[in-house]
Length: 493
Image (cartoon, rainbow, N blue to C red; front, side, top):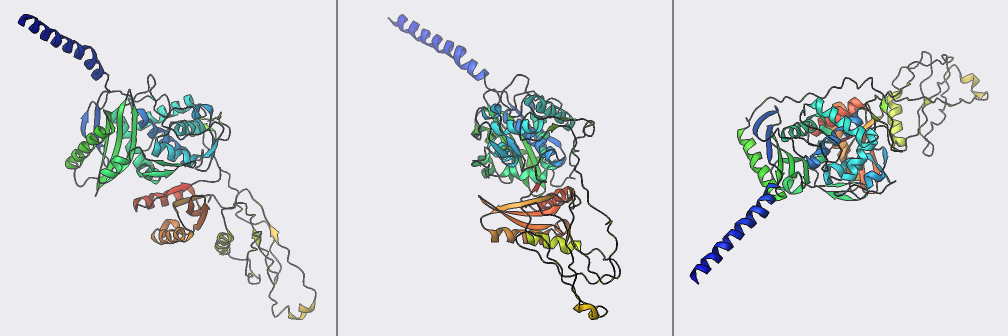
């Protein structure tokens, strides 16, 4: 009897061992491989590395490249934040996480960018890629070209969202490079990655990385990623004083364990990084074919053609008037450009006219009359003539009406089609207050721009208008350095 009990016990032990070998071991082997990389963002130097050059599934860390190319396309004038993008059937059919867009729906690019950056929406990422590249395949080629130019030598992209696909691979090292370029190449957009919530047009979305952003001191981005093949991935950045660290982790077992690992590596980075280090920003990518390659026609109706083509904006500002000089004693008619932009108010036009009348008048011309605006049309009223001493005897004669002349041109703004947005506020008063405060703080770049409050369904946008692209870009960079939320507003799309 005793021998039988021993045999039963041994049999039970054999069964448990066999179960462990057959079931538990294969499940653990299916866990995504682990990789980590810690970088001093100021210099790009490695602080810690483990398995960082192994090609693994990046999951939604892919969207960092999608957004980088979107920012690049906006800066080059290929598309604007206000461009309306038509959602394709492919984009609408993408699996979660998604914004819930419908095929045929039209939505501004700015909302797609927010949804991809904050919610990691796959449908939004696909729509961005199709709007800029025309198709997933064309956009993927542009992603790979950009990755090569950035030095991401072990990365291959097949799609714009990061869902698992054969050959779609990257490394912890390469994704840290990607995060660093987002930070330094497009600081005017980087604040997107620290927003806990954002307005995505159709609804408000929450950040997939909000737990880490709320728990780690100095954290301000960047991007999470998860698929079964990839595990829980995260490229994170944090700043404390003059130090900034970027950490990338691949293959986390859960959100909690991944965040704990990133926290540990962040602390390691701040301990080892020098308190003072020269800031060496990464070089922006240079493409040999940017200026010569033709634009690729877009297959997305309502979107702007993508590809590597260069967009040239025609500015036909008249530098010298061909009108003959007026006779002495005759008032000069005022040249007024027809106003078509509904965002520009009469007050804005008045300010622009005051700037314009600084041009010296022809000799022997009577003093320029006061100019007022007609509220309904924005046209300039006929100036009243002030009789001179020489003309008083003829004052009784019938006055000849001075005919107003309107000159239309391709562009009379000299390229000042751009602006910057410094936030959305619950009241007009709050928006105007921020505009005034910002203008006073950044007079060197915002001087001459027009302050404009635009009412939206969600609040009041505080905008500076009438700027060149270079001035708007510089203003956003300087405001971002002051921790002021800012993004550029392109010409009407």
